[in-house]
Image (cartoon, rainbow, N blue to C red; front, side, top):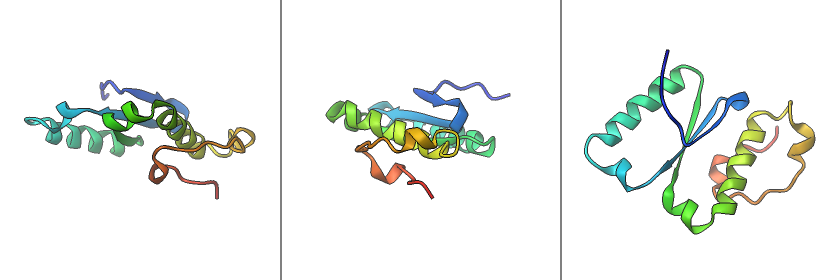
Length: 98
């Protein structure tokens, strides 16, 4: 069993969000993050890393991007909510509905 802490988790989408500050670039942290991400991905989780600067620059847009991504991964379950219009801060993270 894996035991990790995430900054944000959407269990139904098996989505983990990590907000990466400067500490994630220091020492052996990049290698540890890579190993952790590989283990979690192998166990069915999707991991998205968002720079802390993006959150600090526009917390509402970043939150909207996270919500949009979680909804897109649960499109069938939440198809009525999907129609809500979000303007994501990180559109590259968002998969639109098929």
